[in-house]
Image 1 (cartoon, one colour):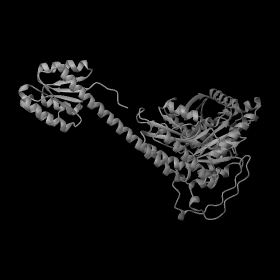
Image 2: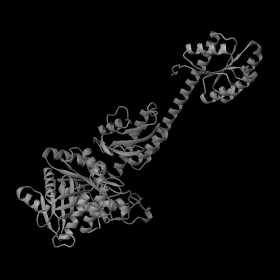
Image 3: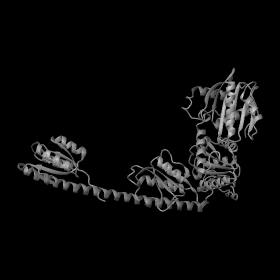
Image 4: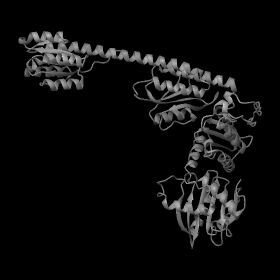
Length: 609
């Protein structure tokens, strides 16, 4: 398609005043832009900087130096059209200007018709030049699209669907007009959930698992383009951050169709080689199987008003597996069962092949499986992330499981997951669809990573030192609202007001269902005495524990309240000072676990599972 004609950008190196005036009038009437310069050096500098479509040159300018300017302009700007202007006395100079590359010769004094005829020639040359550039650009884009399709075909040799997506993403970013992208595909057969197989350069990161609507909403919010294979209502999605919104992906339909075929082929090969249930490098299930089981569990919970919980377990980046020659023999994986399916047979206890070589995720998965029930479903989503589905489990049971997993993973080497971040969400308290539950769980997992227990390494302090460290931190903490909402905040209240705060926290926790409440008991007014009074009035299925620290050195004046509820954990801990209490409180489940553990040690009683 020939580009739409536009006004020309013109420059005139002219000292003749009548000629300059006529050029201004004719070009303005034609819708062109003209700059007139009477000094030759200044005109040449402007031409080099602006690259006009045409330059009018008075060849007799500067005692005949205008003729040299014609040659200089043609050498400097090969695509420029040079129109020579000359009085009759300088006709020989004008003919030399045409020989040096000028496209037209106009004799002074000028006429409007002559100027318009010369400009028509310039317009034709400019239109041909723009059309040629457009054709070259289209040919280059088509060649780039064909190269992209060919490169996608080579990715079909990838061993897994995720590896194929990563190779395809690299090809798209190399050949396409985008600086960032992501690839999504269905999590499983007939699943409405999508899983992000590969991404690069997108900030913020798009969701790792969600439905198609969430992808479209994220794309609309962050000005991303979403492409899908033509004619398909569901399947692979290619999300792009275009460098230029007017420059689409070359051969987009062919590329997205090839991408969908590539992922389908590698997925089919994966399933035929190892089945769709098990992750090849650990004892966990695949994410696709997890999505299928979670969907059935959600339907069952909705129909029968049941509960279930899920957890996300995020680990530090794992080191690559050692070479196969150095890989230790892996013990046969513990057989696992899942709702409605037979227990899979363990693999043979032979030395691992190259595809079964040892990976830290094997040890991590085994530790997690050792902390959960046989009916729980563990899935490996990535090298550093696992999901756990816990049927018939509420918030208290899920948090108990979270603590058991955290204790087991802490025993591993730090590079194998010792600093795991675990978040829990329950149905229907935190959501009624899988994508929302996973987002809540991931948000809580990230909150545990920011816990003061982790950032200040408080997990090895005894109770007395822990309380003092928390109080010291509260003095240095930023004002409320300027820090993490779950961070400890300092308070100093009369004892009676502290009791009111504690009772309010307990009442709020009980509104969400059953809770576990642990409080210290002292003589006089204390949070423990208030909790005992509340136990007598409330008929709940919650668990209540009061701890007397009166005989413990350094703990006589400690006031503590820990609540583990459906939605998380709450801690209130400090020291009594006369008729008041100086304390800190925080919505931090990791700190809640630590304070309960230290209260158990101080009292000699087991206060938590």
